[in-house]
Image (tube, rainbow, N blue to C red):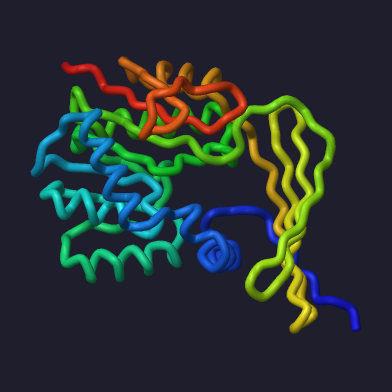
Amino acid sequence: MESEIVEIEWSWDQPIIQDILLKYYRDWLFVTPEIAKNMVERILSISKIQPPGQVLDIGCGTGYHAAVFAQKGFQVMAFDPGDKYLEIAQSHIATEGVDVTLRRMKCADLGEFERFSLAWAGSYCPGQLFPSDVKQNFRRIYKALKPGGWFISNVAGKPKIPPSEKARNWRQLSDCFALSEKWAEETCFHEHCWFVYPDTNKVIKIVEVERMYGIEEIVPLLEGAGFTDISTANRLKGDAPAQAGNHFAFWCRKPNA
């Protein structure tokens, strides 16, 4: 009997992809409540913002960071394009007994003006966007911040690397085998993943083409959006400098009026 093959183009809000990410990669992608607590402490040590200031959580995922900010007395608005992530966020926030405004949306839908003291993006993934679109996202975030407000982020997705040959790999997951084929071109990274379920004779193929962004691309886009005092590091919780070809974090400010 031939396998049933379902092919899907990558998108964070695609329901089947949400299910796969939550089932197999949840702690890796969305961290844990304890890690979120430590991260929020680092964010506050950089920004020095005080409650009851307003915080914007961009791509909030499971809502762990948003809940910690709310526990500390901040007014929090959090959004994500994935409804399944937001269901978990809503449940977690209710369990923690805090008040967070949750919305299903993307940065392109952001229309707030001079409201927030901090914009936080735990895993900003620009790979599905052209540079002009990333700059527009940064500009929307800039406009949403009060004068002197902070924008702090980890940059996720595929870091900028040189072109490479195809590399193939596989691993066994709880109920399936995951096979991958990856390669980089000049500006884009390609990844094809097959999730093979022997018990049901089903195969889910995910096709991803992602534009690669490094420090040399992101920093000028932040500057072009109006941000100043831009700092980068290899990770938000460390002091080592950001390096080409690796993930990195940044923090910057909207100038005071």
